[in-house]
Length: 250
Ligand code: PTJ
Picture 1 (cartoon, rainbow, N blue to C red):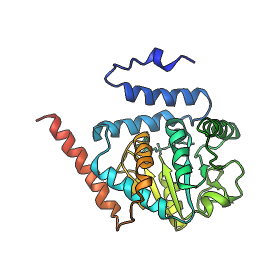
Picture 2: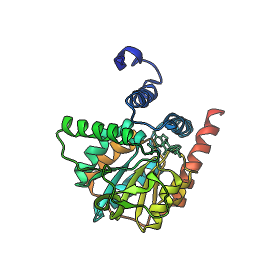
Picture 3: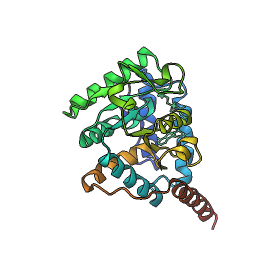
Picture 4: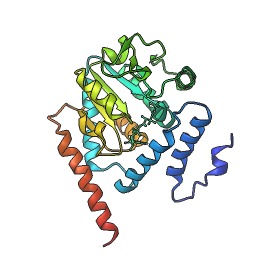
């Protein structure tokens, strides 16, 4: 594999975006991702472009709310899929270590090869960061009710018995199934119109690598839980997109 510095020039105006793309491309080569991972990423990029590729005020409000709920949870868990691990695996482990909670690999397109590759990657990051975060998902013993097939597989000491779950880049079905289990579901999704964003408890409309960095900063502040209104907050994200677009032509 080519050294990333050799193929992406840091002075390029879209350097960050290109580096994030490269993380996805490299993870694909390692067998960590679903075939449709790049399509999902491209959809995210399009929304990020509309948002101005930065953390907008409503996203920061949602991020703080999600941190408050994670800090106050009895059994928090961070659910990770292929894209989330490829883009922000190290920061999710740091976050889990700050919270003292496990991460659980829960993927839509589950194969033994992908699970092996993702677990191996997280184990490597755990030891590189000198962390001891529990990595679940490899030995499922429970099912998320309402989800057929391998994508419903989960662990009793992780997702199944959690009260609060952080799910980056979730698909709508799983989000709804987790909400139906009575959990507080905290979603990271650049698309404010997605079913996940609309059905979850707290929807963070922001790019996953920015969110994890913000969360790591916010955890020591231990913010308080508020009477967060998800629909109102998503509307603020949509309003921001519209304002951002009209500014471009004025
Ligand atoms: O690893 P697996 O098997 O669980 O598969 C993962 C993917 C992402 C392929 C699968 O869950 C999928 O197809 O997802 P969707 O339904 O395309 O949804 C992905 C959502 O994440 C979309 O609404 C995107 O806008 C959003 N998204 C993509 N990239 C990012 C993102 N949100 C935040 N940060 C991103 N970098």
